[in-house]
Length: 284
Figure 1 (cartoon, helix red, strand yellow):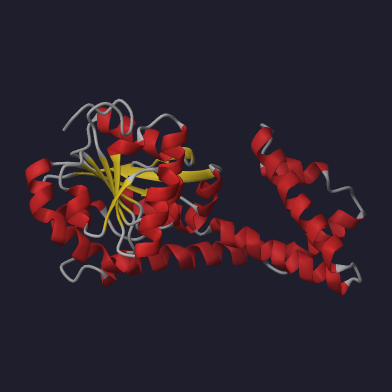
Figure 2 (tube, one colour):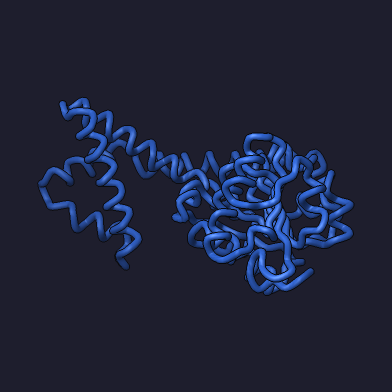
């Protein structure tokens, strides 16, 4: 493999297999951080998406996976888990010849599965970004198999850092929990905001006021969490005056089993990730 110092620099080429929203976000982030557009190629079967990537980002686009991956040093697999096996097996011969660094963002598909489908001996980094990556405000959990050296780890981290923070996971068995917590996590916040808006309207607030109050409250709370060194429990304690309105609400959440419900939800998402792995590999 070629130099791993930074994504899509020098003589290195980077191929995205799949050109959906997450791929587009990563590509845009890379280019904004100095990557060369002419070193990035994208395989995308949908004509409109392919044309938009070429027009908006200046990258080379292809209808076929092999055309994009054929001379690339790094492959980013950005396709749905259900089609990942077929995609990998279709690229196996090229993978054996080029030995690229493979980066997968598919939920539930293990590094061992990816390596086997590609013929073995391939450096694989499995990662799970989340949708705030579209704003450069995401977080990504990463796991590297034994074929990934220190330079390749640095390259994978630099690529995913274009979408936000990164966290390395040493035990791949915990990647399904990463998916459950951060990959699916934005939807949990959206659900809370949805419920808060509905409750605000039920209390008589106009729609526009309810929306503004909820959105700015979620935004402000998120900033306090990320910009403070304090634990969430301490921040909660500081705004919960004894006998006050906040305490009344918090006690209602606690009596309703909010903590247990959140734990059960994350457990269900974790188990679903494991099921995706098993469902897409009859050889597992």
